[in-house]
Image: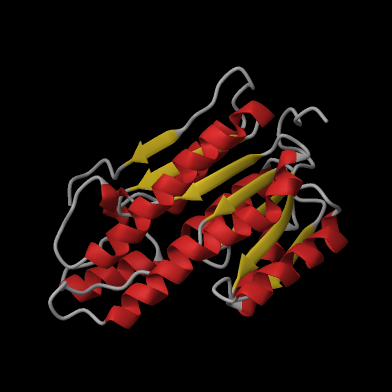
Length: 245
């Protein structure tokens, strides 16, 4: 089956859709006319995103699940097939966990949690939905982090998971290129999201959201890449706040 031109009526599954960049990407896709499967743990926040998306999208379904639980990923596939059929045009990974800590004192359980949420979950979800993406020569987006470009203290655990996520995306891209599936990794700098507000608090810094990237900025470049003609593949996008903080 030939890949869809444009995003109208494309079926898009977006994880982390209950806040921040995930919400912004979901709403931008909805504005383009895509049909949405919104994935997250916060039912109330998903409902808020869905209510806005429904103004421009013909179909929006929310899935309140925990992606670190394997059985819930399997159930998600079954529910997606029931709601949308057996094809997924776009899969966007935007869910994840961030925990700070230096190597000497960090809780090893925090590393395990971040690995499960940031690496294993997107790996397994991609593996589970990949036949549905392959069937329509779809696209997969991994929202990563600029942390892998600038190593720093106290974020070794999180940075390690983001390096692993990049490796998964790069390897997958090589594997599915012949089947005409595009794979994009995005590396946003500090973005005005609830997570970033918490990070500023942990760092003892004043949170000035207006000096950061906006979630809509990231969403705009992602959707622009998804709309590129099939003669091109955008593989990596690095995007930073314009003003130095």
